[in-house]
Length: 391
Image 1: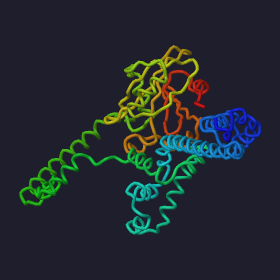
Image 2: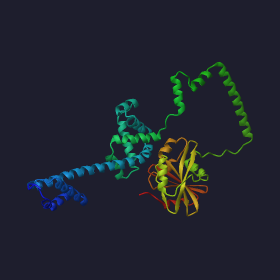
Image 3: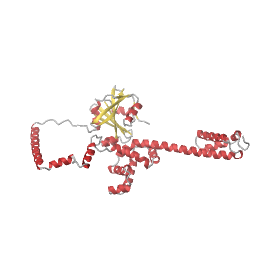
Image 4: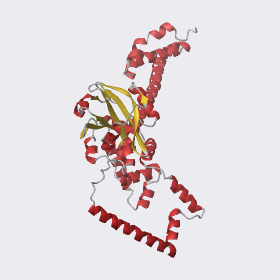
């Protein structure tokens, strides 16, 4: 080795002071050790001049520390962003359902359609401040579902550009696509063909069609009068009241017909299966109850929801837990109703609402934007004490 270059022995002369300096540059002993190791490997591979050794070692240590800090900061930011996006994907649909329709309209125009607040304000004939108010209302709604630390992670970890895709996805789950017949009707209009409604209107305006229609109405009216007279003379009991629009009653009605369609004994396997079906849920841990599988319940003609089936070992009976979401309730709000009192009761996580319907008892709670409806023939109050929430 050239005499003007530092020797391996001379490198060790500065180890103590370099290691102390490394400890000032990082809070972790392991990182300090790695910095020293990297600097010494570089010095051994390309020995610095002996008369500049101390300065060279300090300079290289500072440079390695800067590189490590930048890499660490980027990794931390990336992890925060991923965690923030995960949180947002879970709670945003529920938060949107709490907003007034006007605020959702502002968010759709500005964040989904990407109109400027000024353009949206001109279309709505309102002040551009409406968008600021809608954003503020969204943040307030998010705070109701997140801890202060989680909300800070969203606020400082995600930019507006990163928030918009989640808004598009969440609003897409709340808003339905146009029905197929509408598309066909519009294509007919574009080709000059009359729509069904126009055809009906055109035929109704013809004199002959009008006379036929009046005759039919007279016949129907006569039949109606006769039926009313007969009904008054022969009173019959009122028909059973349908409860198909009530979420709780509908869940109870379907429970007796449920059977295991997908057998699962491990909650993690069932969660992965549900995720592939588009349901990202957390299966609760229930003391003295064992998961036996999944079923699907046709709560509406066009809607089936997954049901968790447990073997309740305290009563040797099956426990059914229906899975709903706030987004689903909003989409089917005209056909499937859950009382506002119930929604207020479960607004906070780990808050339950209990109902008794005949021999069945129902326990309702929420976790994130998922709503759980448990139907049991046992004691729902006892069941509430046996449910463990994820940490």
